[in-house]
Image 1 (tube, rainbow, N blue to C red):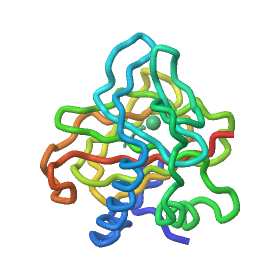
Image 2 (cartoon, rainbow, N blue to C red; image 1 turned 45 degrees about the horizontal axis):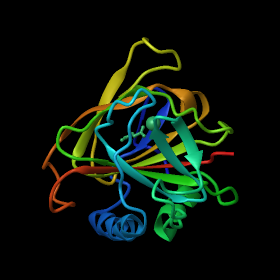
Image 3 (tube, rainbow, N blue to C red; image 1 turned 60 degrees about the horizontal axis):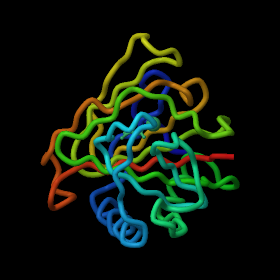
Image 4 (tube, helix red, strand yellow; image 1 turned 90 degrees about the horizontal axis):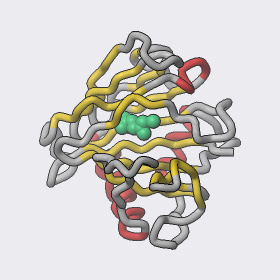
Length: 202
Ligand code: SIN
Ligand code: MN
């Protein structure tokens, strides 16, 4: 079993788990996913533009639009989501489970100035499995609180190759990304940050 390098608000953090070569290979896999299921610009249920762009791989993908937040089996443009890359599933097998694989791999892309407000991941039916989160590219300031909105929070800069596991009590912890350091990594030639979250939905 691989041990976390630190814990923050009950979240296990595996810093530098993916070496630079693995990060490059993963980005290549993700480029193929994005070619098949392009990044789109989601809006909240109230119609406010989110600053990240996103797409998914897997049986289900997460979407947000005027109809609200939900999982669905099609990209907004109508195609089925691509399969979750084998390399991503290997990471899940190493850190979560060999038997139950994730239903969804959400891909968030943070360009310059993008952020994500504090929220819980709670659109899934099953909260017994952890959420696994992979950071690639530019550094991002990740903030985590408790399971109640408005409680104390703590922060950590996530770097390319870091992996988080949010399970147990921390499965429903509030979390978000305050800002990224645009251009801090050379993994993505035009800058930006990619975050993958792997989830069991139902
Ligand atoms: C998310 O909560 O969906 C994204 C977290 C991150 O970008 O690190
Ligand atoms: Mn989240």
